[in-house]
Length: 238
Image 1 (cartoon, rainbow, N blue to C red):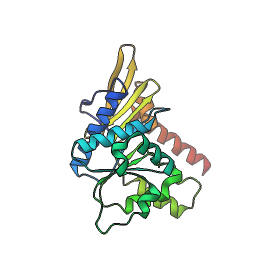
Image 2: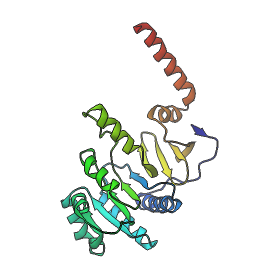
Image 3: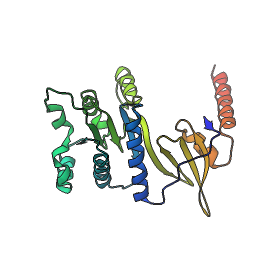
Image 4: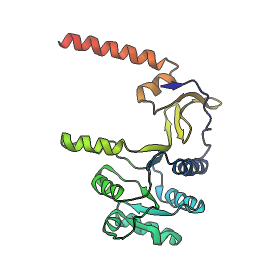
């Protein structure tokens, strides 16, 4: 649903500004206590996520927020320990964390880096076994249910639905989509003089809505037209 309020978060000019915005959004989201599972995404192709993750971990520590940095595989965790000796004691992979035994619940922020559909089972187990909040950086779980049974598919959809978006920055053809907690989702159009804010949304807009707004159309009217076409086609088939 499009909001009548003006957009309030500015589009970052470069990656360093985007990282700062992401860090502030994650810190604000965690402080809000509104959820235990938060997602943050920089949707840039060929982005090296390792330095982004390390800087986010240090930003959390600077705010007196204890953190545990967890990677899907042992190789990625080893690279992180090599590049960040100051974080080596709090860096591990999913299997190490699952094997870790403790008599007291771990309430540190679990910063999970880049889990993919192939990591789904391990990642769900890690999240279910962790007592503190979880931040997923550049994870991709949306298509994890492809090629599995209906029961498992519904279970996975339920897990995906437990995440709230703290930060999202995605370049688009002719625009950009931004969500920086606690602000709404914001859609920008690329004009000759730069990016111009177009619309604000309470929830993440779907691709059809994005395309309609960027084209200067009424997304609600377009959706009604599409629904009418669908009903017409259904009538022909029946």
